[in-house]
Length: 504
Image (tube, rainbow, N blue to C red; front, top):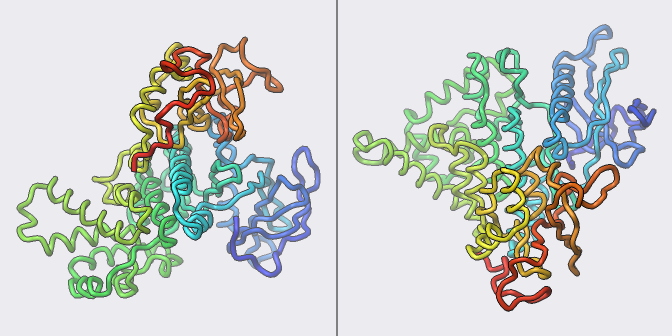
């Protein structure tokens, strides 16, 4: 939640009422933008986001900030209606508006951690060892899997970027800044949706045009933003650098960018405040830095002008040339240990007709699959997989696990599945998978067995279940209760072929 903090924040010292707590004092500004400030409070687990509604007129409030407050409040309330989503956003403690004092606020959970951008920068500074790479893969997998869960509930984040994800100290991730969601309540009045995306992370020309025409936004918007986020985490920049010679060559070919420039000027007329954030393609070429929203349009026109007989090539061959060229272009700008991101970035940001269909497909491009013998062991012996089959639930995910999503249980010799991954896969059904803890290893990892509710451990109010472990990266499901041990193995035996045998 780090940001440029003003020397004096306007609402420091303010008291706001939070249900169940009474007066909460705002102590210190944590993050700031022209319309909102996030404040630390005298309650360690609570922060308050204040919307400045002043507009210079004593009898009026700022209409734009007030609309943003209403939108974010509605999004908080909508997300918190779904049990399967509530755990992936800050807890919500209440909101209100003071029209006389000209401010509104939302009280929410304080998340102890770093945003993905700053965390990725620290990972890069420390070096990309095997553990760091798996941590990076796991974080990207988890956030995109969470976004996919939101899509399954018809919630699009729209303004997704690394700054809008907090990686907590325990390694789990949560989405923050819920102001720009496009939800089912916007479907019937698309033209009234307040579009607030950032040009560096969104396809503003396409999305703004669709909204003005009454066409609903789709998952393609979030998939694009996810691709840009990956590139930013890897390079520290949200724009592609361009070789000066290539840029100058493109500038001398105005036919490949003049139409896009005319579209950008149309956006300027509708949204004057975007003039600096959304520069003309020619300006981007002169600056040697391209917005991802322009890369593929420009590259397609450039390749078409350079490849002999382009127009006679079959469309699928044209598509393959474009994808291959763009992927290489992206890969050359990634640190060597992160070149595995190139294909995912390309397939997420390419023209929509060639883009991956959903975030689940994008996640698959970022995988580091566990060895075949591990996956076979999970499918055949894991108690969670067996339990889900008995309940008639889907188990296909068990055949596509990554190295960080499995751990060998030395008590049984078999492999267990990471509880957070299993909880995401089962979504709302996770609360109905009851568990009994079997043991804890010497590194603090707990192993659980899927059981009927009557056999499950007591856990405060109710029984232990998979939903309660969705953020516990030290919890594993799959203790087979001594059945099916490998030949010659016994509890505590070391079985060859640990999941740390990696496919790179």
